[in-house]
Amino acid sequence: MSKTNNMDDFEFIGYDNNTNTQKKKHSKKKKKRGFFQKLIITIEALVALLFALVIVLYATPNMTSKILNSTWGQKFLKSSMGQSFMAGMVDKEGYDNVFDSNFVKEDIKTNEELDLSILDDYMNIALFGLDNGTAKDRVEGGDSCDCIMILSIHKETSDVKILSIYRDTYLKIINNDGSFRNFYKVNSSYGGSKGGAGAIVNTLNKNLDLNIQDYVMVNFNGIAKIIDLLGGIEVNITEDEMNYINGYLTETREITGIDSPDVTTFGENIHLNGLQATAYSRIRYTAFYNEDGTSVNNDYGRAARQRSVITKMVGKAKDAGVQNVMKMCDEIFKSEEKIFKTSIPYEDVIKLIPIVLNFSFGETGAFPFTLTTNTELGVYLPSGDTVIASGLDYNVIQLHKFFFPEERYTPSSTVSDISEDIYNETGAKTVKLEDYAGTE
Image (tube, rainbow, N blue to C red):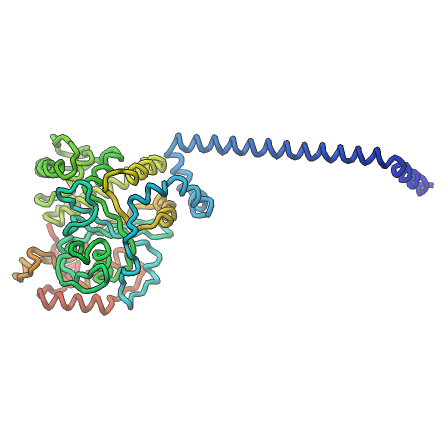
C-alpha cells in the first residue's frame, strides 16, 4: 500500500512536470541571487574594513610600525603579498634617480679561499661620506672619502653593527677592476681613473676578508637634509666642540649652500639641525667623550662622532614611524640635488625593509682596533701621516669576531701576505687588545 502511494506521488509529479520545473528554476535563481548578494555584501564589508584599516595605519604611523614589527607583520612583509605592499610605498621611478647603474658587481672581488658560509647570513654594506668640496651637488668623483664605515645586518635576527674604518689606514689599494695599485691610505682608493666606489669596496674586501657587494654614498648636503627631515638630533657637546662646530659651519655653508645659525650653547642634549650636526661630525681637533666618560682625539674622535651621529639618526628614524620614513626617502630620492647614491637594486631594498623595520642596533667600533702611526714608528711613508694596524692579520681576526661572533675565522693567505708586507715596510708589530693603551 505504501509503495503504491509513493508511485502515485511520483506519477503526479511527473504529470505536472512543466510547472514544477519552472518552480525549480525560479528557486535556483532566487538562491543564486541570494548567494551573490551575500557575496557582494561580504566583499563590500571587507573593502570597507580594509579601507578603514589603511586610514588608521596612515593616520597613526607608530601603530603601523608596531603591527609591521610584530611576528605576524614580519611574516606578512616577507611574503609575496607583503613585498608588493612595500613596493607600493617606495617609488621605483624616484629610486632610479639614486641607483648607480654603472656599478659593475662582476668586478667586485673577494679572496678566493674565503669561507662565505657564515658571511652569507649577513648583508654587509659599505657606507661612504663624501667631502664634496666646493661642488654642492657632487656625490661622486673627487680624490677621497671623508668617512668610511661598514654596516652589517644579520638577515634573520636583524641585528645591526657599524664599524668605522679610519680613513688614513694603511692598506693595499685595489682598483675598481680588481688590479693592484699601491700601498696607501684606504680613502685614496676612491680617486684616480680606476677609483670610485668599486675600488673602495674591492680594497675593503681584499684587506679584510669580507664579501661586501653594495655601497651607499651621501655627501654633506645629503647628511644635512636627512637630519633636518628627522627633526634634528640631540648631542652632548663641550665648549671647545661648540667653537669648532661654528668654525666648520663657515665652510660647510659655502659647500652646501644651506644657511644655519651658529651654535650658542654647550652641555648635555644640545639640539643640532642638519648643517650643525654635519659640522659637528667633521671635528677632529678636540676630544670626543663617550657615554662612559672616556675620550677620543684626532681622527679617532671624528670617527667616533660620525658613529654617534648615525646612531642618533637611526634612533630618530625608528621613532618617526614607517610612513614618515617612507615620505623622507621619497623626498630624498626625488631631490634634484645629487646628495645620495647607492648600488643596492630596488628589489633588494624592498626585501630589506622588513629587516630594517625590525632591526636592533648593536655595537659600534673602529678599525684598526690596535694601531700606531708612521710618526710614532719614525718611518717615512709617501702617504704622509698614516694610521697603521698593529698587526693587520690580528686586527682582521678582531673584526670578524666583532661582526660574526659565531664564525671560526682564520685569515686568508691574501690577508696574511698583506699583513707581512705592511710589517716589512713599517715595522709595526702586533699589539693585542689586552696590551693596547688606546688612542685617548
